[in-house]
Length: 463
Image 1 (cartoon, helix red, strand yellow):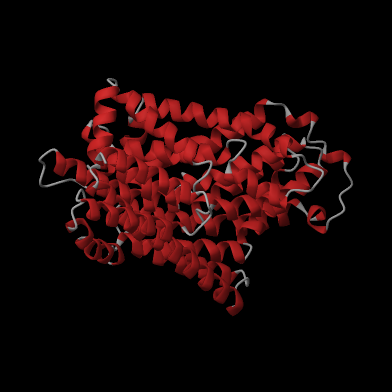
Image 2 (cartoon, one colour):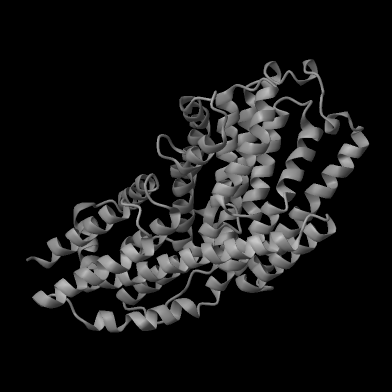
């Protein structure tokens, strides 16, 4: 059998088994082991690739940057379980409820802060849906608009640092970038750090919520937001403005200060990502302690969930490493380089094709699977063509974010459907997200045309 055809069959079988719902790490490892064994049997696979696997696994487990993953997950879970985000949303609603689109703006702001503090899309969408959807509907927001605001705000955690997506993306991009440089004969390769990707994501991460708010303000929600005509039945609404402002300050500034300290220490080189993540955990514990929201039971629950999520991430990473090594041994990298290099003359079209593939895969695969499977395959080819890895990384993060928001298979839509009342139709959820998808695509297009938006801050900081 032709080795190129065998490599293609290997890819197809892998994606076929991923759709079965079996654990991703075991699927990747199992398929890699089966196809490498067949390759050894027929003499077109070099067993030295298998010998390299233990060293690769050891490298993953001793990677200092990846130590930040469980710490950031733990920090986000503490902020979620102690209902600090819930308290912030209630306080903001009380402050902005009398302005045009006030509730929607509150959801966007809180979604932005949750994205920066937790980085977990599912948790953000579910929390915002449970807390704000009934309130927005009660105040005569159209179902579609309320659902669209929640889904769009909940997915901001994909792009706003310290996003888990950016942390994992930085490590995989760095490996692919170094591999590309080695392929080009550069034996002192440069790297991509987490701080680089965090800095590159700041401007897009700020632009999206601002554009969301401008959209809300532009559709004249005053006709919708008829709050003054609704009887104020809850005790929070009967508080004085002074008390509301005090509650708002207490709930708003601690998370903001925590985010600034964590991000600033990473971006400006004061602390490594793992050190900053540990600082973030300490800050989250202190905030929840001073607000008397933390208990030993919450710590226990967060610890167990952190172990589960971290184990899942590392099993996928180990499986993806096994998968990519076997693919390289089957000359799959040369196959991709030949296809993209010989059949597509415009290198920007090559990048566009890869991004489109990731967008479509976002309908059926989790972002962790896409990052660990697709980037090792296509990343070296893209960087050999001369693309900036930070720019490519930001585009990938935003494309995945848009994919999670796009009907009919966007993950954030499923999360909201799970907590939304039965009287809200799924079609209303779909209808509500389209304006925000257009904003997303617009921002992606601008960054595609003007790469300096993503690379300006990393270059400025590094200089």
